Image (cartoon, rainbow over all chains, first blue to last red; front, side, top):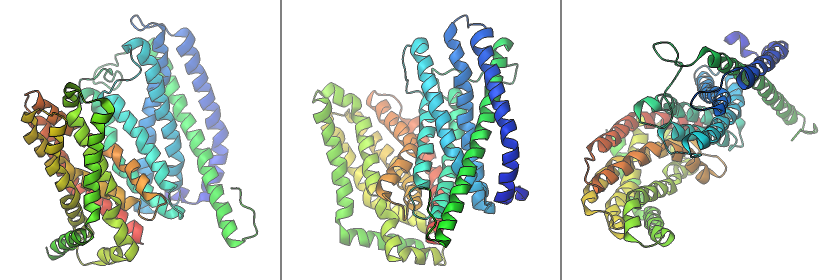
Amino acid sequence: MHWFANPARFMRIAEKLLPWVAGAAVLSIAAGLYQGLLTSPADYQQGETVRIMYVHVPSAWMSMFCYMTLAVASASFLIWKHPLADVAAQAAAPIGAGFTAMALITGALWGQPMWGTWWVWDARLTSVLILFFLYLGYIALVNAFDEPERGARAGAILALVGVVNVPIIKFSVDWWNTLHQPASLTRLDAPAIDPAMLSPLLLMALGFQLYFVVVLIIRMRAILTARRIRALHMVEPGVESGD
Amino acid sequence: MNGFTAIIRRELKLAMRQGSDAAIALMFFVLVVALFPLGVGPEPGILERISGGVVWIGALLAAMLSLDRLFQADHEDGALDLLVMAPWPLEALVLAKCLAHWMVTGLPIMLISPLLGLLLHMNTDAYLTLLAAMALGTPVLSLIGAVGASLVLGARRAGVLVSLLVLPLTVPVLIFGVSAVEAAAIGQDAGPHLMLLGALLLAAIPLCPWAAAAALRQAVT
């Protein structure tokens, strides 16, 4: 971990890694979409609308994965003062908010034909909506200070406080009687899903994961560059700043 | 502990002498609740149905309104730096501040809530449950609010920001508070909901002062 603590070294490695990860993301999302939209069977109950699941489920997984990334980065920023951790946290938050919004929107599009309603106030949907507000609150808090350092530290504490919501989302379908179906993959016995549907789902999940890494690297690079411009600007008042 | 009681006495004295801050939150609470019959219409059936939720949402918003007083004034006049340097654990001092904040805002809100229930035609069987749920729930609002208030110290537009941060975290209090009142209103057992509210309070008492104290240390350094 500490070997990566040098921002310049991180930028160099990320630069080399980026095209490969981006290529893999494009390939797996393309393969997942091909299988999901064309070769996988329609569900015997849900019909063609089951294909929304190939976007909805990976987005929902990623919405929680991004939050855990945000929380772990915030913790290592507060505990070890890792110089890249707050950059990673600030870079991950808007991506997570995007995935959460996508999970909510695709869920509503699926719910309208299946449940007959765009939205129900059940435990899973409400807790994901709260997750979305937590992301927005984090982004607002980080940007609310004149000193970026103070914003990063306040945001890190907020991110750790918000972690209480993650197990609530995960287990909401088990703890309460909800309209949302319980987990199909992470069960003790075999996954309750047909292999022909499982393969596009996992491909899409992998593709979303790789996409997250690509956007994270690009955003981290942007934040580091913005900081360097800011530092230059402070040393030499004559240098034009980008914003 | 000496520091603990000293903080509570100081906060109460300040609230007593300034007076208006606590009264404003209470007035806001009454006003918000009184707006609902004007907004949704005066039919007793509808008002009775929504009374529990309206009273709780009013309490939630009134609690948000008073949060910026919790640490802001101390941050501005430098008293916060002395609190952080004091020989007592900062977590205990934060807990004392939360307790004082609750006595000044949460307690009056709790005491006046049955009266507002009366205005909304709430079922009389639910009054005791409403009082019990408020007694368990409003301290949680002060405790969670303290985390938000300490995080936004020194931020631009801190007053709006603190509501944005705190309101999503108070959703469990709202859910269990309202379900306790509604269960009592239709003659069911409100016990499980009250126990969940109590569990929230017991979890918030150690965890929230801990997080708020961490945020305060970041704010003063």
